[in-house]
Image (cartoon, rainbow, N blue to C red; front, side):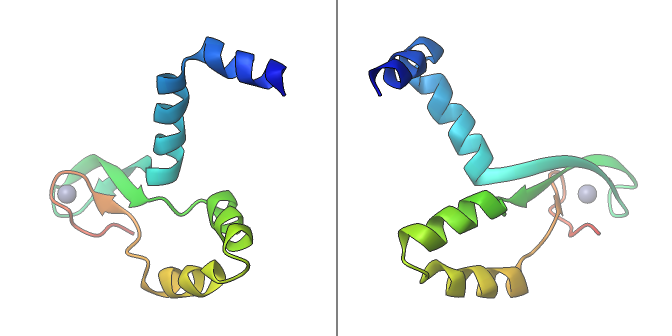
Length: 87
Ligand SMILES: [Zn+2]
């Protein structure tokens, strides 16, 4: 346990947190936006299965309801420039 803590310390707490936030917050990819008529950076809110599963376990299954609702209303990919929905 101490070994793990030390390894995290060497990586830098800030760096670990930054990386963690990146994983939890949103995903990025390159997509074609018809509105901007070019390849743009598309963003999608965090929809990581690992995170959803973890939250489901932590909330004793309650999160699975939020997960299902979120899956139905999920906005999907959005253009980072004009906020237009991308396919
Ligand atoms: Zn666009």
